[in-house]
Image (tube, rainbow, N blue to C red):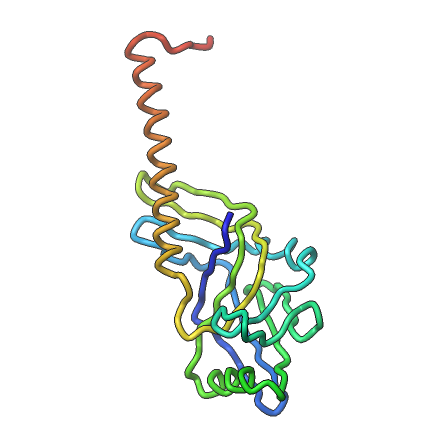
Length: 192
């Protein structure tokens, strides 16, 4: 699986004097519309394993790996899960002008969205109708979190999820069609 990105309208808080940034990078429960027929939801279990097993998650500015705001490996990024979602707090380096500029943009309200970069480890697809599908992210490998000016790869994610749902529906239709053919031809095995 490749790295994917999802975003939320964040509630980021910037504390200039303490050089600290905090807020939710993912929220549990709400369904994110990925298209007219596909939605996605982050399960409360999604980050449990990765927070224990992934030794070094980074907080990047706008998904730019040239501007690292903090990382769990050295304790400048703290991540935890609560009933609402994935919460994080970053201690910003006051000697890093890029990081301080990022903090100032958040403080002023110019940047309000958050995003997280991840790989899907386990998910569930729930068909709610012939055309409506919900993907539930049950377990992910978290690579990074980011305050973002614009949602990264949102259209790509929508296209990928829609194509995935259509492929699954096509396979299910093919299986159904083969079963109907077997019944009509009298070749389907019956169990009594």
